[in-house]
View 1 (spheres, rainbow, N blue to C red):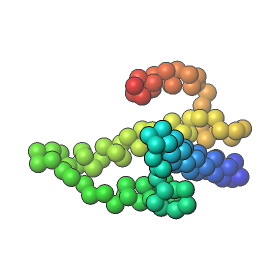
View 2 (cartoon, helix red, strand yellow):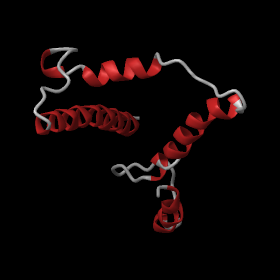
View 3 (cartoon, rainbow, N blue to C red):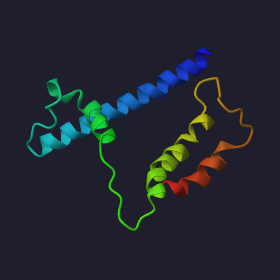
Length: 116
């Protein structure tokens, strides 16, 4: 149980660090362009990633007239599910979520064309 909790904490910390790497990238690009960068949300713009996430969830959906709206709604979900399928296969510590006896390198090689 503690190892599953450890894995969840590590995944959450990776996602939060990704948000702050995004703010770091935006700050560096703004300094290159001689601007201040995102600083409206809080001191030094530290809450900007959370503001971006809230703004992303509040966006309205625009459907083209001759489109399949079910496919437009399900496409982000399918991409998210496909990207999350690989997480249980990664060995995180001594505890593996899925006990795989086959070679994971073959699986990674077969799934790599979908990235490019």
